[in-house]
Length: 282
Image (cartoon, rainbow, N blue to C red; front, side, top):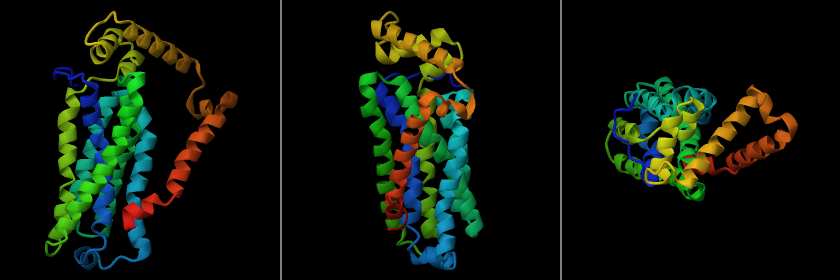
C-alpha cells in the first residue's frame, strides 16, 4: 500500500517512529491518572464510585486484550507496518469519543477502542524492531519502546496538570484531545518505514526481503555476509514454523510448556507488582 513512499533505512529512525506506538500507551495511562482527581472531572461524571471508576480505568485493558489477541493474525495478514498503521484508526475514533464524551458509557467506549490500538502496538512494535535490527542492536532498540511508554506517561501527566486549571469540561476535553497529536505523527512516519524482511520472506517476496535487509544492515550491499546469513536464518526459522503444530498446541507440545509458563509468569508477576495502581490512580 505504501510502496511508493521513499523509505528510510536507519535503524534508529525506524525505532523512533515505531516506538511512538508505545508513547500512545503512555499517553492513555496518564490521560486518566492526571484527570480523575480534578473537580471538573468529578463534577461532570457525577463523582463516579470506586467500581465505576475501576471500570473506566479497566476499559483500556479490555481493549488491549482484544487488540493483542487479534494482533498476530492481523500482522501476519497485512504486514507489521500496515497493522500498526491501521490500528491507529481505532485510536483516532476512541480519542474522538473521549474528547466529545457526554457520559460514562461514551468514555468507556472510547477507552476500549484506544485499548485495541495499545494491544496491537505493544505486541507488534517489539516484533517489528526485532525483525529489522541486528542481533547486537536488538536489546538497545527494544528498550526504546519502554522509554517511549514512560515518556508518554510523563508528558501527558503534565499536560493533564496544566489543563486542570481550565474551567469546566473543557479541562479534560482539551487534555484528551491532545492524544491525537502522537497518533498523527505516528501515522505520518509509518509509510516511510520499510516492511519487515521476515514478513516479506514469509510471503515469498524474496528479493524485497533481501533488499530491505541489505539497506538496513549493510548500506545496500546485497552480498554482505551478515545479510546472507541473516536471510538464511529467516528462511530456516520459517520452514521450522511451517512444519510445527498449528494453533495453540505448539506452545505446550514437546516441552514448550515450560517456556510458555515462564513467559506468562514474568508478565503476570509484572502486573501483580501493583505498578499500574500507581500509574492509574496516584
